[in-house]
Structure formats: C-alpha cells, structure tokens
Length: 172
Image 1 (spheres, rainbow, N blue to C red):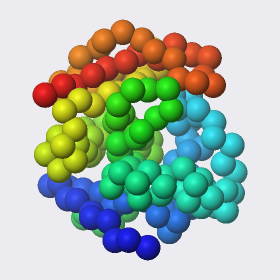
Image 2: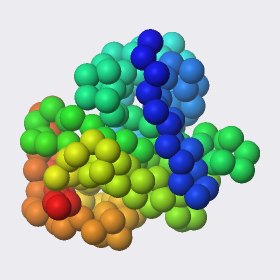
Image 3: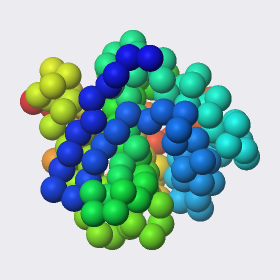
C-alpha cells in the first residue's frame, strides 16, 4: 500500500484512516451525534467498519491523495475523531467533514483539525473552493464552519438523503 502523509497541529496528529482504525471508526459511527447528524451507515462490527474503510475511504485517498484522517491527541496518542476532504456523490466539488467522540467536544479540537484540513486543501491539494454540508439542527457544526470562514450559500440535497442540508462554501 502507498504511504500517505500524516500532518500535525499544535495538539493533534492527523493520519490517513486505515483498516487499523476499524474499531475506532465502529465506535465513532455509532455515537449519538454521528447517527443524528451524519446518518446510520449500518456498521455494527469491526469487520463491517474495516470493509467500509476499504471500500469507501481508501479508494478516494488512493485516487485523489486525500480523504479521511483519523485524529490523534499528541500528548497521549488517543484517537479522538476524524476530519477530512470528501468527494461526495451529488455535491459538486470537494467537501470538508469532521466528527469527534463526545468526550472531546467543546475543547477546540474539531476546529484545530478542520482548520488544518482547510489549510491542506488550499495549500497542498491546490483546491480553490471547499464545500461543507450540515443538517439544519447541527448548530455546533454551523458555528464551527462560520469560525472557519465558510459562508452559508443555501441548501442542497444528497442522493438517497431525504433531508435538505445547509451548504457552506469557502472560496479563495
């Protein structure tokens, strides 16, 4: 397998998600916030999480050079969440996304990770525009996107999703 770069911030390490992260991804995808704001991916076992990583996350990383990153705390190596850039079906352009375990909320980690992803998108991956989508009731994400200087552009629908999502955009 190709070696992909990891990145660091003051408090975090962002490593490309691999099948080694399956147990953590299983946990994260079954948190209350993930199920409510991102949606149930029907991942109930470590094996299913590993297949999801292999079939949904790694192909984009291999194709585009970026994708989903697992976020670790530098001080103790604890896996805290994910952040990344996604080529989502039904959305024109690249989308930024982030999700953290509940115990790491409200400590600035999501902003630190997402801000690094935004910086990489612009400087390393040479994107001039980044999208972000969120549910209308996910006020924490909306607040974070505003802090990241994304502008609310309106709403959109993703194929297979009944819900109208808010669409934010950051352009150079």
